[in-house]
Amino acid sequence: MIMPNLPAFLAWGLITSLFIAVGWLPNGILGGFGNADDPGSWQGAATQLALADDGTTFQQYVGMVGPMVTYLLPILIANAGGRIVYKERGGVVASIVAVGMITGSTVPMFLGAMIVGPLSAWVLKKVDSIWAGKIKPGFEMLVDMFTAGILGAAMAVGAFFGFAPIITGVSDALGNVVSWMADNHLLPLMAVVVEPAKVLFLNNAIGNGVLVPLGAQEVVEQGKSLLFLVESNPGPGLGILMAYTFFGIGAARSSAPGAAVVQFIGGIHEVYFPFVLMKPTLIIAAILGGATGIATNVVFGSGLRGPAAPGSIIAVYAATPRDSFVGVTLSVVLAFVVTFLVAAVILRASRKRDLAAGGGDLAAAIAQTEANKGKSSTALGAMASTVGAGTATSGGEGPTDGVAGTAAPVRSIVFACDAGMGSSAMGASILRDKLKKAGRGDITVVNKAVANLEDDVDLVITQRELTDRARRHAPSARHVSVDNFLSSPVYDDVVREARAEAESETAERSTS
Image 1: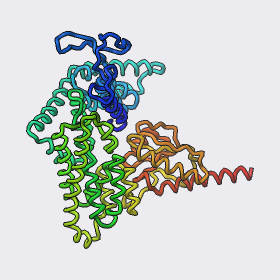
Image 2: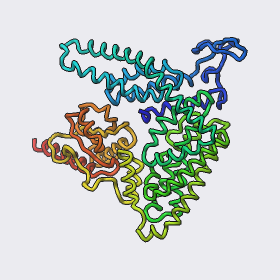
Image 3: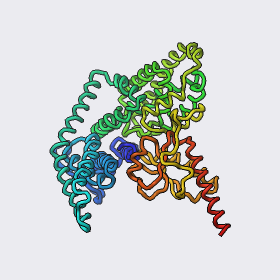
Image 4: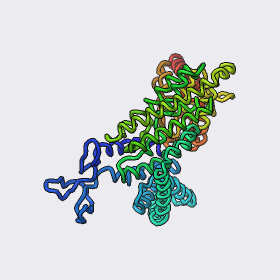
């Protein structure tokens, strides 16, 4: 639900950084703090009644920052959750219910959107199933429209009076926990939970599910939040990778520099997770580094205006307010230094033992990381190829419904993954290039989210865990499962079949 909407989070963070009262380019109309009653004010923008310090009221510009965090982002999250469960109908009803929940609360409803989005779509799906196939021809649209409209309206009212107070209470409770930790100087202890969770791929649940909603609420109240930099600080990951660069051995040492660039500049933190899994004691270094970064932001009162997504140093600085550059920079630098020093001690202490054992198995650690993630990864797959090992299982990978040797010609191929971007886009690009070199550039190769698949494609290529879902969306297509979108022998099978089809067609035309 969060990943497809990260561009909207980034846009909100940039607008906030630029146009609020303490932003880089303060603008009362766009930032939502200007007085529309002042002589010469622009009268074309939306306004709301506000209370001045002296007790008088005035018309204040609404701006873009507030509506985006209050309405746009939660509705997008709910819509994405609804679409995952029940396609377009689920997304529409989820958006309706989200508005009911948003207007029934005084805090940003990210948590609520993650709950009511898929839940309301699931309810609609169950209700539709009651009379599926029982409606007389010609009345389907009427029933579908009224079912979604009535159910959406009813659940929106229920969310207003039911879910909104509950989620508000949960948000307030979480906010109180953070405030209590801040008052007792315990915020650095968050690293004890966050850093191990990252390696186990629970970082999105903690970051997007808890820290981002709380951080957004703090931005509304204070203009910035250090919570955005708890999970996304690139310092600890860079420290571990650089420690391997100088003190590691074997494939881990040779792979670490490239992974450091991907992690620090590209913001893909998962590339350092296998290095921690190879030597779990390194989690101590990550925790100490993360705690140092949090403590630095506490001391300097620094934070970000929006989520740093992905966790690149570029994204971090893009969301940094002008009064936080020193604190944010030091939080990254000190987190790196502490992690690097502790990791270096750990690696040096075990160097002889590691050499005697032949070094750690980086390929196995990458495979374990992908298993923790639950799906293949473009960045991890690329790193695996540099150490001479893919992520295929011991049984290999191959077609589920068959690739080569089938009679039906292939004219369109779709790579499908959860979000429809990232690894599936890379896989589609690889196969597209192979087909062009084989003289079959006429075959269409695209990438999509599994939820957006339609039954108008010849061949669907998915990761193994998504194949069953893909079949439900495209039952007429041939389906192929792979373990790694970046390096699969299936692609060569597809190219051979496509080349054979072209040769067969050419032979038929020559004989006729």
